[in-house]
Length: 59
Image (cartoon, rainbow, N blue to C red; front, top):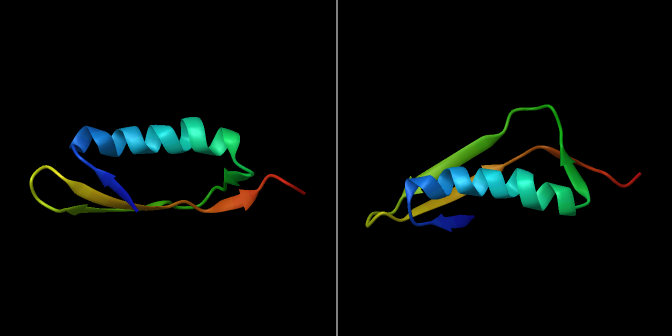
């Protein structure tokens, strides 16, 4: 779960997942639906859960 402090942070999180995390991890996304749950906690603070189907890059 990520804590995000503005709605622009939601887009930034997705950019970081695909631009930073996947390139440096041992995993890659597979062609399947992704799921995002965003919870408005008030005071311009959000919590976000992201589920991305993955597979190992390592054989």
